[in-house]
Length: 581
Picture (spheres, rainbow, N blue to C red):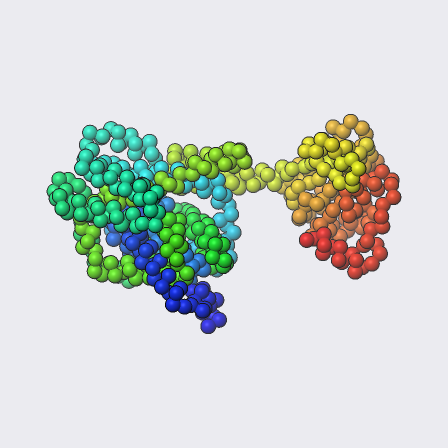
């Protein structure tokens, strides 16, 4: 049982499983399935596939994730963002609607699954940290516009060439606006209105199913399909066949960038919502096991003609609100979809494509994150710039290029911030032994002849030159001659060999000019490296102090309390532990 619990988290969740929890899982599974079935069909259309492939992606992947995922509420399946990425990646290689297009979409599911599985086994979940929230927000908002407008052709009733650029989509729609099929438009607008109103009036109501029923009955009862309303038509019945995906290695090379993007973006979407509900339900979600669960779900899907899946925000919210307690809810959802494939696909014959377009448009336009723009405007203009850069790049250059530029911008910002860390000049607060940044505390007073500075970053090869240049500049800017420099190292969590060499150069330069260098608040890991390099001994124990006040007093020649490390080894050890933490 221990091995099963380790590799299949569902067995951990099922410990103490009772009838009440089983009833809740069944209800949640049924409720989520009602929402998933029309969504899956719509998202498959968004991915450039027939609606049936959305249902195929909602069977075996959900069962596999139910066993291997650590989230008890996450609702896995086709989602808008991944569907758009599939269309962008596969559409660049194959013509939509062809057997080659279907084969490549299935192959993409296999590639995404393998990438996520390898990342999970290799404990590489941290890689998603390079996708900062502003970048994801900018990318998601732009993609939502592209996704929504891509459905205009189904809403207006005439063909609009597929494009990842909204100006091309809008231009084509406006140029051919006289071809609008008004009955189709009426069905689509009515569906959007119903979805919006029901979301406000009764958020838990299965509004997607409501518009599916509304649209299908309207078309069937009024014979609107004979009037030119495009419908889903025949949907193949039966469960998806088990088959090995076609391995086209040349295509795999072309698909790899989009597979990597789907792996990371899909995981980000899943882990964000999974952690939210894990906190509410008071249990832990393991990011690396989540990668394994999603990876196995996509690999299994590839053997049943599914395209890539991940966890979705809206369905997970419905699943959680309906009372899901374990992965059993996901398995129940898959069973319901499977039964639908076996017995009820004929019910979708008269379903208008305009209704599926309405479901997609109302779902994705909610992803446009205006609130985050307002928040970042007040909190961090640099991160707002990253959001806008990613947003504009995605709209103007394309899906893959947009997220790539966003990631590069995140890394560039990280490098910039670490290579130019914050440095504060410290002054003494009157009547105290505390020292604070003189730019933030007007009452803080500089100590004549002593330059006290605080470094707020790890010291490594990327910022040592900035440190040396900053110390030289600050020394020249002082109104009085600097006789001593005190470096408050409380903000330095780590130092590498280049940082240690920089300290030696700084010390050597000060010594030549008759300036004493003192250190305060050196943390344990930094202290260990300085001792291993003998810099600590070369400087002398007396130059390292427990506080800035002690260091300043030593610099002024005032008496300083004996350093605890010079008295008892055990005290030194206890001090190192305390400072390190």
